[in-house]
Image (cartoon, rainbow, N blue to C red; front, top):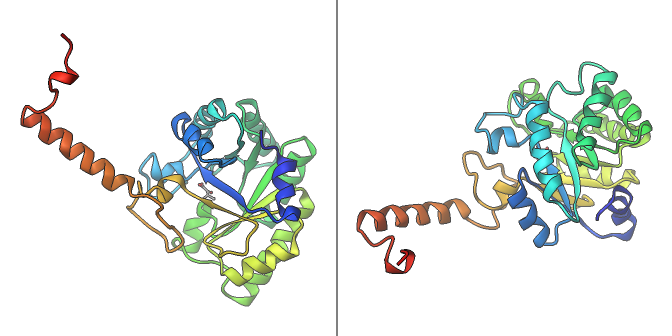
Length: 263
Ligand code: KIV
């Protein structure tokens, strides 16, 4: 079973950390069979599972349900649960309470978005034994502030603020930080400035690890494909082909055949 301290040891050991999202038991088992040992139950499920434009409508109850499915199936993975919008913003007390609920259903850690604004939350959670992963750069829950999913940290002042946020998150106790959609050079600077691992998504090759949304990397979701997504399979195309063949064969009386029938 991958633990938080083991996850962190990858950085000094120089071993890349591989993280993918999963939202159910079936894919959790496939991810583990592939030897991937860190799973993020991302609030990206709002987009790829629920079909919304962004992640903002995802609720605590929905995240708890999916975390329970993943944690119930995981045998080796570090399961990290994403805290949805408005589950940690209002107060430190509410943030700690909600974070704890994820551990009660089997997650080993939580992730939340933001820098300076969430330091008190990160500190309190860590103090009470809840490992926290930070998330900086293009943080999807702030999509309306950014005016869309845009690369962050391109300007000097933005980049400097992000480096300070990363250092502050580490000092507050975060065990790792996701860096999303920022220039590769900035991600390198942040990665070198921290003792905790950085996990990149659209942040270039210099991070200590990488994360991708599972349905993006499998080529299942193609409504919107950011530059940083590489589809390693084309499961949507395969699914379409299979479904069209099934329809055709039923229409033509080829399915079910004798071998699919009981006698
Ligand atoms: O929600 C999510 O899946 C994420 C990853 C893309 C980092 O936050």
